[in-house]
Image 1 (tube, rainbow, N blue to C red):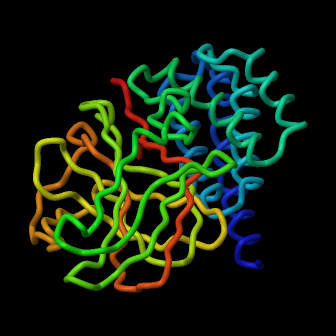
Image 2: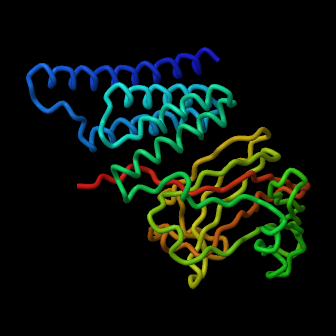
Length: 296
């Protein structure tokens, strides 16, 4: 706990220092008679720094720290008053979060930051437009199972929607008949993930090892990355760059990287050789863009 508090304080202090430095620079420019307007690239830098600091805090279970950093960033932009920002919208967002939970408030301000970023960097993928899978009764029909019965095994596994509108991957593995895996998958429209660098997953489960799968629609095998499903809700980040090609359960050395635009299938797999029942719950799956794309 002491480490978490120290890390939060450090991150917040670092960003406040960035804002003070930016403010002093503008002040100095105004004293010399030079145009003191804040250029768009400075606005993008400030917002990018806020997101880079805030996202890891949110994902590590510290939404209040993430919210604090986003709040400092937006208040700093109000002080700098660049031409690109909608002052009324920013003030309205800052007032709104006062009555919201840290989790909801962090997202409210993130959407505001993304909106400002869109005005200065049109190529940036806004949070409102991010690829995102949430679960409802409609989603149920879009997921299908691929288990080891395709090889003669008898493992059971499938997908269902819970009463709380989350997705559930559950079943039981069997090692009989050289089996031992279960998976669920969904098809992705070709090209819809172009420009994305990976996925954020909000999951909880039984502590066992699962695998995220992605693959082009016309290629044998899949790119995979293992993760452990925590017992409490947690957001996990899986970069595409960390995924390796696997064909028939065998990892291919020196496999080519996969890009977001190549992906035509996404899914989950379990193959940890444990024969007790398994269960993982997924709240949502969301694509992410690793860095702000600068516009020259």
